[in-house]
Figure 1: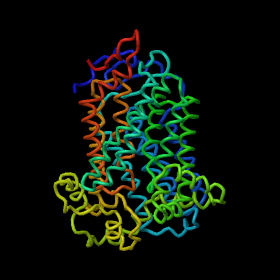
Figure 2: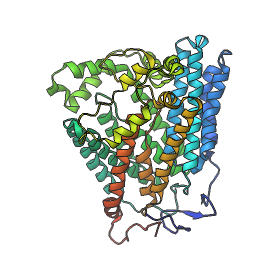
Figure 3: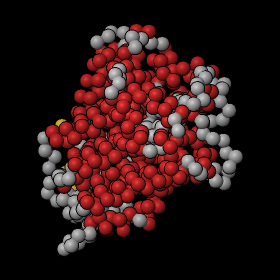
Figure 4: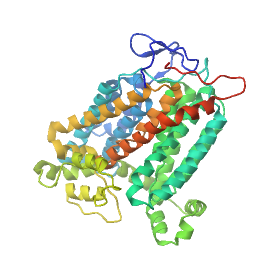
Length: 491
């Protein structure tokens, strides 16, 4: 796949190359992305800045998000990378917030302080790795003026087919343990269709009800599983909104992003409130009742009739997202460094190079085992508890070597994103591949073995589809009587 040409003349790409990043011809006076990150971080951090005991930690948290956005290049970075950093930051913020809500903010231990501080440095290291690795032109969509030529109706049909295929493959994957991960990797293709659908609706300014329909489908299918799986879909939708805004928010884009974030937060709080009871129901009830999606929705709708303590659920959600508590529990053993049998990064590489289909005796990835190994705390066998790759990086390389590993993770993700931006497909296609490849990857809670294996397998699935199938699909999207196929920006 060759590099993008020096000057773009495609009608769906209103940019010119000017000795560096792509420049929009009309920036307008809108809310800048970097400034928006300052507002968000400072507003949330004000919750705890009123207490004098931990004002330094709260101030560092307030500064870290905009600092990471500036470090990564602000508007120059793909939207999905910015969102990944935001989710990483949210995990650190919620750690301190949960202590504040539980009334323990004045009793924070030195290990908890170190875990938060190291995590903030890790956030900046991840941003630095992205900045070092991403050297390609900015991929912002254009509102008004030249319009995309993809037909929204066809894109929505492709999304529905991808959603049906996703459901089918998910069911098949767990019936073949040796091929579970490779089969599940193919489901990333659904995110491609979801991104293109949302982007086209926003850029063309029509059929936006289809975005609502797609989000409803994602919530219905993702929130009714034993383990919720709707998070990557929301990240992809938010990435489409950011990309279509060109890094500067109009009121309409702020409103759209607000609706998506509100739905995301509301679904997460509701899921947190019902999760223990719902999982018990699924584990103890006849499978003939629990396998039907309508039966699951009926059960969930019945919970609305009961009184749910959403305040308690919100606090519990903050505790669930704030993963530095587990990291802090591991600090004594990390200081001693006398508990692990092999480097975790080696296990991650072996998990990819030794597919279970060829090595049936390969140990099963067990997040809870690693967490117990690092913290000394025993968890229920029915619970999957991951400590996150930041803590694992410290176990492998210590301080400051751990930050070198995290920089390399950011660098690798950015280089792959840069490779995808050179593909000889339309602008929205390149944006979609980048978003699908990076959405919800290496989030704070993920252990390195699962995060690395998931990224590699999904990257391979995307590359194969890009090489052998996407051009035909894009031509079908663009085909219309009396219209030429969508022009290519990299000829």
